[in-house]
Image: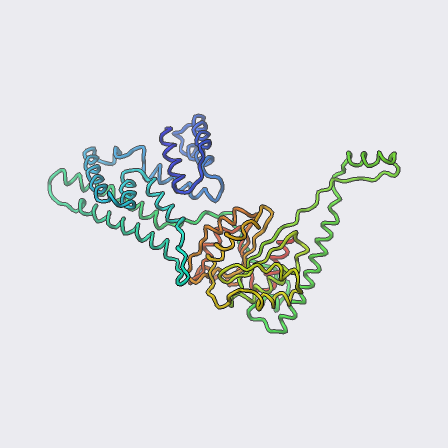
Length: 463
């Protein structure tokens, strides 16, 4: 049993799950306290130690089914489903496959997978997930992982062809019959390897808050999309936003003014009264100031979403008194820090300066992957466990590499990640949209294409 648990922990590590030595030791000790023949208890003990969060539980379940059911390492090739004489034939086929892929790491990983050891193949898949796109100034593409998957698929198809050669032999000779039986058994395992290559590798995000509804606070104007507003409607909407901001600031002021109210602090009261012989008696409360949230905003200012980003930046600019720190970035294909512009200028002038006085290349193609890469490289120190990261954009990256793993690292650094999409939800995931990919790494996603949706978001964020 110990060897089996060690092999399974190695498979988990090869597939990207973090499993420490102490966790393996704890798991082995816990297995001594349960009936290991009761699979629900056995699975629960392993899941408790090897899956750190709900996001990893789906990945763990897939590995568990692969290792203990589909691959059946404890049975090896002595399963009763196989004829005993077929074991020798299977080994002969595996030797032939190993000889064919002696100088091919991918082919060797596939042959070892067929032999019952999934770890080398899992390492190849993990290498594929972590593969970086080679930087190029002339041409950007999302073909690195695709070409890697295609290479593995070609090796699988080659192996399938070799197995078909054994399976297709005809004759009455018992050796050939055993070879056909063994090739059919290995072909089933090859189908498993092919399915693992094409399955969705995104983490489970059961805790995702997907906001789809909003209150219709302003009929007519409140339901108009930002992109379709006239000049007069923009002026009216700015006035509504100013009124909302004043209301929010008043509410926040009352919340912080009331922070002294709370549990009576007897020690502080007596210590303070001792200096005046208790005349007059001044009541002291436990002072627990409310924590103000830090905000980092990444706003897509490309032509397709600029109308929505303008109102979002306007709101964040006006709400700075409600947060302890606000850092704002605008991007098309790389983030530009516009915090100083917002701090030193009136809101309308600040937005105009963003359009005219920054180095943002508005003629470039939107590239979210490059933006995440540059922000991770230069500004990841801005993210702490008190920071809320707000991303405003449609998630359309012009078929460039989405680099979603960088977003996962940003998520791990901050308190939560909120994505506001100005596109209708029916368009998410269509064409060059990577929204379905990115939302697996967010805490909250919501459409934000009109005033009512924007107000709902701000009230949820501040209050």
